[in-house]
Length: 490
Image (cartoon, rainbow, N blue to C red):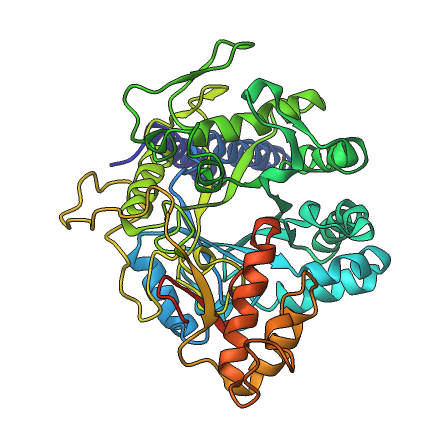
């Protein structure tokens, strides 16, 4: 069925065509005809302008979530198969962490909107070189644009969480350089941004207290917001209620974090806004932080959100039940029509990307890092989900969660099954070099010294290291060589 706007445009087109045909066939002088033709051409130009305005004003910006497509796995499907899987999830947009040419080629001539990323390690040099900036666009965007619908270009990932002061200072200048390169090279439809983690905020609770850290507020965030506002781009933010809840499960209700709460609300004492879920709280903290710097209306894009479907023994709440519940609920909220928005921005579309497409087995850090996927590496779904928001009920029965409370038994860190033994020596040396007398017992003369048992020594070192440093961020991973166990290794 034709929309009212479309019918109006079609009518104007027909009217002008009839007028022009009548003009050509009328018995006028050459001068009179030229004048009339010029008038008709001006009418056509006005019509085209009107058509554009109508199409823009009538366009809907969809809140349907897209998906983050990470590639840190040695067992993932091919780009072409991955694009098929993205379509099967009903995702209309995808965010890459680079500008992988094979993936961009596989996305060619699809309706999938694409976000690409400039690697963190190039940012400082791009700031210093317009040529490098131009060359990056020539190599990574122009070969695919516009047949691949590249619409967003993110400069780095969570740069402001880095301890590198030079890198942080280079971020906004690099964004400006990339924007100029796009303009110079005739790329008109691509918005430039960068992703921010929650740690860019000095305060986030209550939401009205939201403000950016003092070390970046004036020096980085103010010029960044100015740039994003001028170019009509977005503030791209990573929002994970899982991590906020897992750090303080005694004081944050799990259902409140999962969008499942029916009787838990939080009222902001300054604004009197009422919150029914943790996600909205976190988003609105950014809204108020931007307002403090003079940009109350800048649009927000959720660059990452999700919940882990598995993790290590000491990682609370990472299970399939919670992951399915959170992701299904966040899709329902974000894809709602009309848009729901947040208490500080009711009714506003909140575009987003769900993290992530796959469980990625080569991601470092705690076990949750390798278990955020909607899909297993073989392409099967970890749990039923689709991203259009149209599915309100799912048929499958989810496994009951077993780790919504912290594990209270003993946990050891040992050599993982199938680990490459030739790499254990370096990992053992690292564990033993971190202090705290980590490896005294396996040194020559020590009570556990077994010179012919490298695996035994490595498991001892891993467990000893982890016991000493887990509270300050040490993990039981060692590049995939280690794993947790609740079975006493003796």
